[in-house]
Image (cartoon, rainbow, N blue to C red; front, side, top):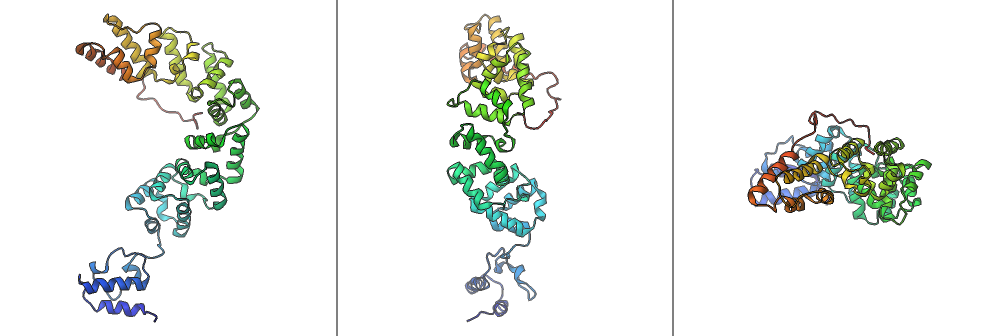
Length: 384
């Protein structure tokens, strides 16, 4: 028998709105008959009027705005607030297009919390065309990353994997690294750790020559990092960083060999290298070539680690305490972890002396460089 929806609503209006067992049971039957998805406000909590429409009684099966679409997809009010705060334009998004894109993300296994992270990272993500080659892209990326879980981790880390052109950008870059001898396992880990690998990677003869001059073999565990850092770096940047070391009397071959042993040095800014090299030569009174054997002198922060420990070493010497930090022990002390350094050279003394040294150490750690507070960051694009 076909149920007349208007008749059902009319019968319901004949009964007072109260919390009776009958009214609750009838409300449930009415909702099922009308095939409502959910009821935002139970019928027993508000008075019904003859001019109430079906849309006023419940949430529609097909939302007419973006808020309804997000709620239907599973986003909480807090999630929606965070999304709109990061991308206000989504308030006026076409609900049909938005629903279609969210369905794609749902099929990939992404949740509402994942969507918040993605929008926070890429505010314009849902304005991009993520519907191109959906099935082909998913199959290719799942095969590349080895599992759906790893793929989801990569997408959250770099949502642009769903917007990059599959045939003109993603596949050629993957092939480029595979031709360089990078295994799929190493490549996937780098794609997660370095999201800019795909849009910024390029190799030419000059870059390949730099890779060869590092002296790193394809079997070395540093090889993948050397290749990736040189591939995503601009040639002008590489030349500038090599030339910066040459100003201190280090030969190009020695610089590239250092990059091969400690690739992260290539990611350091020119200013940081200059500050640390000046400290090594001017304060520690060591030759510039010492950084070739002790790269940590370039990596550690000069103002919060290297210089404060050097000043503590001088303080210990002035106070006539033991053990003192001199000669080879200076490099060992500078390289130690914070906890070990304090236990070896500070807390080993009496309580009063240890407090004096600790207060002095914390004080010199808090001293900033001249005009550091008013320094302006000059962004010139990707730091490498």
